[in-house]
Length: 281
Image 1 (cartoon, rainbow, N blue to C red):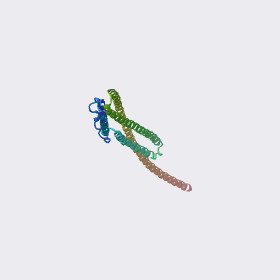
Image 2 (image 1 turned 180 degrees about the vertical axis):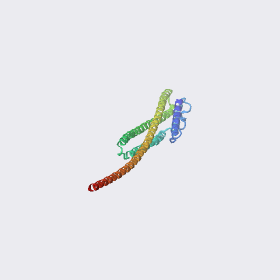
Image 3 (image 1 turned 90 degrees about the horizontal axis):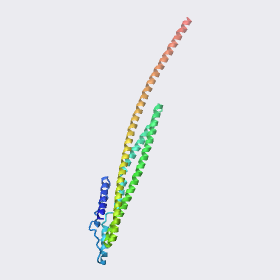
Image 4 (image 1 turned 180 degrees about the horizontal axis):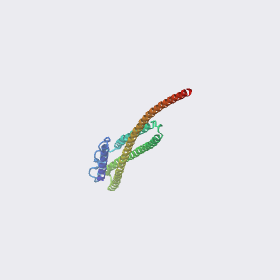
């Protein structure tokens, strides 16, 4: 029984270290559970006048208890802030991705039909991909909230079970050996529940790591799309420059052609005048 209680204390201490390791606030160091660290042998009272002393010992043990719901509340507050930075970064990247798509969409590509069709298809693909990113982010948020809620509730339940177990341990001094054995079995069952909670927490930690990997992958894809958009913008800029040069060449050729036509008309007019003069002669 003492070993089970010590295992509980060790697991709670490790949970505190993990919270601090991920950048969370220190919820406070848990004092050693002195109420179960001594001799576990059962001492039956020889004199009924000792009831008052027993009640005083039980009250002192409850006052010195550092395992309470305040620790669970602090843990919940820390879990609130844990994923915010990563999710905010992803939302900013998605918003920037959307703005870049809008900037591409606003370009005037009516001069070249094929080019316009190409970019319209690209824009539609990017919009679809952006919406997919948004859905993934929302699903990630929901998954984190659900994992956080489950973990916090289980930690709160753990505190309640530990408090109940501590109070029952203090009552062991006035109970028979049979009752003590039953309570020991029950506390061992509660210790088993705590071990199951630890395994569930490991699964939750693994899910959070997978979620972080998914978010990082989304960020990488968004960065890749940004590079594609920048290249597309440069390509459109190059096409605009070529179109501008072609317009200049066309204008120059048109001007030369007009001049040639004007000169031809003048030559024809002169020839007609000469012909008329010859006919008169």
